[in-house]
Length: 64
Image (cartoon, rainbow, N blue to C red):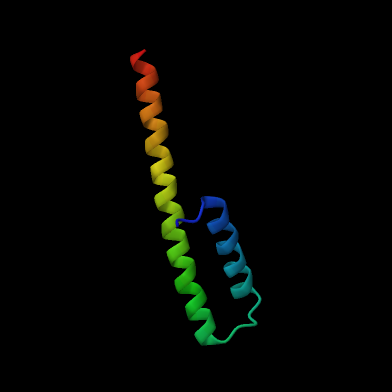
């Protein structure tokens, strides 16, 4: 099941906060960074899909 955009952004913000607090080991920082990159990619994909839907709706509207 794919997480929704808002959930992924909340998780990404939590990762950034953990990394900013400097209270994690180097190994944990690397794991968090990797998770953050994956979440960022997934968010970007959802944004691209949303943009495509908006463009399709706009194109359909223009045909009317």
